[in-house]
Image 1 (cartoon, rainbow, N blue to C red):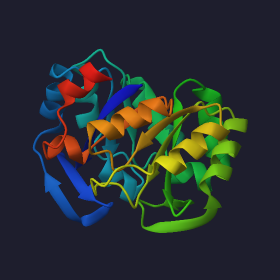
Image 2: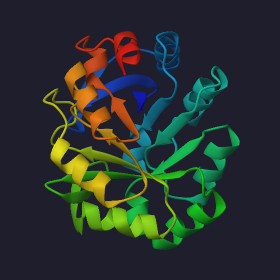
Image 3: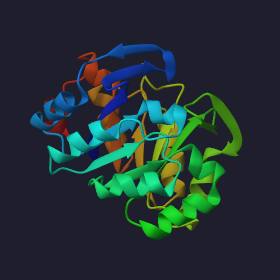
Length: 235
């Protein structure tokens, strides 16, 4: 299982939001320096989110993302407001290995198909779920689409990786929704990366036992509740 330290970028800073609430954030400094910190602690991949982009639908932190990609040779995956092929091309051109589509994958089938057609190995889709239904627009809206149904549709279209987040768990340090993660993982053949609520070594070990492809670790790293070097050694 791959462990992904999360670096959420807003206004050029590394931040953490509580349950996706843009009015509740903690600031942790420079994202480029934070990326180097996790690399030094043994990260084999990084998960970046352009929070400004998630809200506006434009890639607002591309320069910062490029700076992070340029300082490392480990895979970097990026999400947040990616809704046009120009954005996909721009991220691919600076060396982003995996490009994560969110709201647009749900609302714009033509764009999703074009992205997968052009970059079949690079496109992932983030499924942010609330009570089993897909949430959109920076978690501000909930659709009428069931998360598992959406995952199955994505698999048929050739998407190889999904990031599954239970947004009720994200940032709360209360543990992941293991039942939902396992349910989705058991019913698709894609890579499933778990996200949201991971707050202990036991959480990480249980996800590993569920045989998920990866786990994104966020707030627990920034509060010191989890030590990344120790997790890497044990997993």
